[in-house]
Length: 442
Image (cartoon, rainbow, N blue to C red):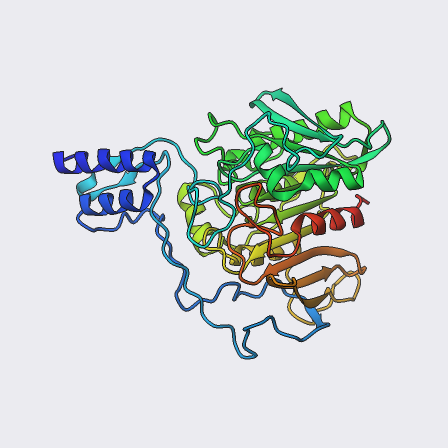
């Protein structure tokens, strides 16, 4: 490697550590003479492809309210071009000119929540409570927020557990919440206000914390093949935490749920697929479908343009039959102005949870069609949204998709007490709690 390139890379690393990611990208490009790295990290979304242009799933939908959200056209959706994000790197060799290579410290896509303190146009860059502080935004009056840990063959993870004041040993539901990159249990608890709902409705909430040693930005490693399987890697840790809470408290076996934001949403989707016998339903906010990526380059590609269509996997479980093909009901939230995780990933999630059928096709077994309904809504003084509900042949809801118009990469209806939230959207936390309550495990 030439001295010029070596100096350039050293300067770029220094800028990345300082958080000046745009300038770091420019330095690297200058060091390479303006050439592309060609390693799959570049955004490749077509400028002619509008956000969410893909059909979410092949179902027959009934329009209940045909009113368009404000500012929408009755014609075809206008093309939306997502701006290119800076190039970021992980612990993979990057191809350089003349066959040179550079390996840089481990990192997940840095464009996940919490990496930059104030992304342009993204609300939620407000101060948050430090770990251990008693903040009413995190711990409602009378509740307890305790720290625990769990260890298995994969390693150890700490977690916070919210116990509402109304819990006196009776059987209650459990919600497992997975934070986004650089976030913490306190942060996502403050931003989503899930503890406030737990205090009102009386359920427990567990917040597993990703270790910085496992990912330098504290992102769940949803993009690694080794962390996408039942009984291995991070899924085994999250499932272990879930079972530890079930063992220690009076949790209703049929009312255990998992939800997450961004990287946490992607991991929540993996948990639902890997443990359909453990979780009754899943909530995915600004996340990606299981199998959307298997390494760093494919993670960036999925985030920037939408992951590939993936099939649900039948996984070995502890059930009597040895397998479970149960579809875990899912509620999916995504902003149509998300420039971090492309809105097309919500389409992929719907395709994943709703077995693809051509419109009007008949189910071979039941002779009926999968149907859905679509409703338009508006938060007073806030964002408009589209809510689509999908049902199976028996009429049971298997998925609910909320597209929030004008929302970026932020928790819809969240509080500025936490990072990456937008109070102007419909309340994702309340809707997830409502959806979970409607879907005990059958």
